[in-house]
Amino acid sequence: MQNHTISEACKLLGVSRSTINRMRGDGRLKAIRSETHPKGRVLITGESLARFAKARAKEFGKEAA
Image (cartoon, rainbow, N blue to C red; front, side):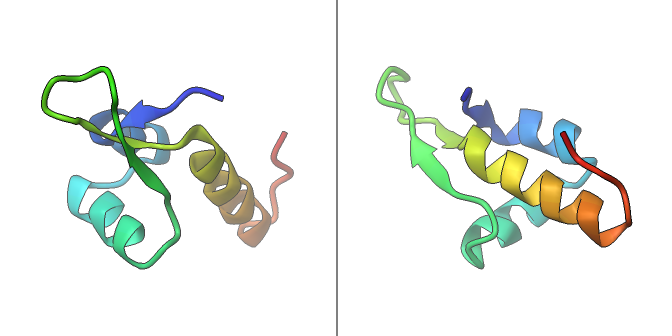
């Protein structure tokens, strides 16, 4: 599964950068450092985004794929 930048994660989940960072801090999203980016860009794992989206859909009574 593809990893995403914080900006991409914001767009996918419809939340702000500070919300993504808060979710990283409390463990709802898993972040890794890019090994290919010179400054070690932070990426949000696709697995954690999918898990969160699925849980959020379930919370609102919608079936997630």
